[in-house]
Image 1 (spheres, rainbow, N blue to C red):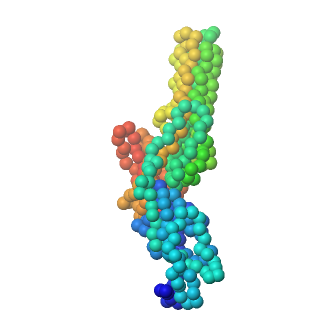
Image 2 (image 1 turned 180 degrees about the horizontal axis):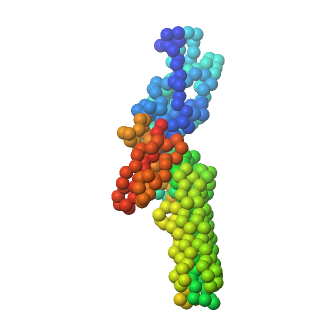
Image 3 (image 1 turned 180 degrees about the vertical axis):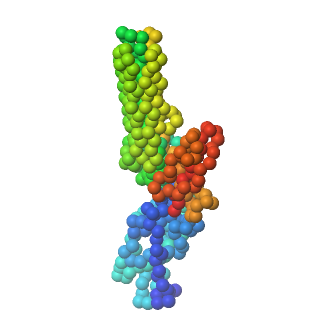
Length: 355
């Protein structure tokens, strides 16, 4: 029987990279599980598995996502030598036998699923209410954008020809967050505030949020009416995430002209306030704009030559008033510079976060 000498053979277990440290930016990669740690099954990945890999008595081995089986050669420890024992095909959690006699496993190959699905895309929630988002069965970084609901504008006076003030714009928050695979997240989309009826104030909108990752945006307040005077515009909402913008407060009315609603914290894309009613006739203010939540998942790496290290997650910050007023990159992100972005007539700051 063929023997392998233990003394010259250094059974040197790899210093396995903990998958939890790498999975921040990896998308749908196959992996195997050794002693409870997920190891990327790709020798071309800098953090991936290296073959052959040796396991000693008592260690555990199992397949992970997108892996069919693991080919293992088992040896029996015989003094200072290893005797061939069996060829094994691992498809479920298995432990290297401690014996006696003790065994040693040599991982020779990993059989992977070549049809790894793509989960790239935008999951958009624009109808007010509470929803459940289930993260794809991969380790993913998601760009999450949250808009609160805009406040409603006030109605006109029923006793004078005065108008109503506009509703406040909602807050906006954005960031890149690590999602736990196949996990449920509660998504709340804030409703738009209703416009006030003739003689009445507008109502506030609703806040939007995504649970677990703790990102939210508060609503805009409703515009008010001051009988025959000037009403107060609705308060502005704020954001709470990695990148936050405050909405625009609603505008006061002026004579018979109703106040405009304030824009949301992200250029009015959602969550803008409703306009106050004009005072030429008893009428209601307009409704604000409902909030929105977007969860954007990519399925590939983003990299940049201006930043050392790859792969990188990328975040773009926009503003239409020039680079000096574009928000700074969040803590822990590298500033890739600011430049003019078209279409949209806005400026863009690029932020990177690399492995």
